[in-house]
Length: 570
Image (tube, rainbow, N blue to C red; front, side):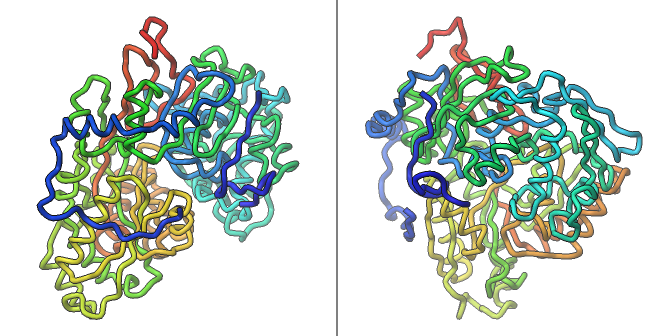
């Protein structure tokens, strides 16, 4: 992405926008026989860790926010067409809205910028009716032309939107994104009049309304983008369509949002000012939360695993099941990982139970397939169980008996401690069972994302949170043209199965086709290795904070969150 004023790119040095290591290390496991302190003593040590430098830096001008949320790593961007990481998507939801939004309690689709819609009986045509009182935060009207521009921008090849595939269900969306069709009018999105948008689908898509809630399909300001190019997100004033405006974004500190008084539903926006803290360190995150410097801590990887079993017993720990999977991507463009037998050997050598019992310890379940259990009307395939002997046979059949002549495996990971611990376990498993030497390359989030996108790795830690409650949100990732694939794997049969499944009106037949596709993914071709399914954890005191509701997609619209007026406060 191009840089902005002062030549500081999004992925570069600190900048401040305001209204008023890369490291490459081999991680070593702890010494054998080293004594660990008791967990209560360890908890005391963690809370005693000084976070003074961060605490000093996180007091920006403009006073204290009404609600402070520890959100995860530093945002890559705030452009709805670009972001892919859950922490970034949460921020974007607060700034930009689409035709449909998520219900705060259920995370089901509900009217957003469109107050109603009609669907034809064959499921192929949607007609959305916009509210008559829609305006940008800068006062100009939001019309159907803005919706049309925003969706076509996602499909424009030069935008390089990883989530462009969400619009492949629209007639000629895939063809326009791939460059096979140049005519925008051929895409099945039309502005019939200033307040009416029609969408023609290529095939019935039962989850299309859920797709419309996703930030990628939010409405963005054409004038600002055309005037400022890639720098538009920092334009002053920034026109937004959502419940909050961007007050400032301070790198390695926070994003501050302020209530948008011109939002159509401003009366329901609960908090005036909300801060989202950028945080990679679980120790510091817990320290900030425990010392009342933050009100909400979401995402379990921001809690030290050593004390997780203690913290899970507390009333401010809210546990739930949701659509999330931790898995490994394999770069199939690099020999010898281009051989399915090698990928099979790696998969069979992974002991998932050992990982969730020794490391994550937060209620996670071992994953042998990719789609989480419990999706209505779908039964995933069995996948591959832990089988060290079978792993050794597969590696021998691939031409590397006992790991002989196998090159050093480059494993890409990010900073959270739990990921380091998982990496060390995998390193030991593959060394012990297969005789493969593994080097662990730890990077900060932005460098990691860049390396994964560029296929600059052998095996990479990965995770995926479902965008909606359907198998497609997981399985479509590995279609050939999906920007989130990032494995180099392309398979025409898999693409055909996914395409045929998503054209089916018969739900039983659709589930069967999806299961066949997933079997290819986790039993036959193996561009990925499922490891475990997430167990959701949020930390907040219900006596002080309200509006955070657990749900299967782990989404919590910020406009619903507020301090309790009858609470004790910080």
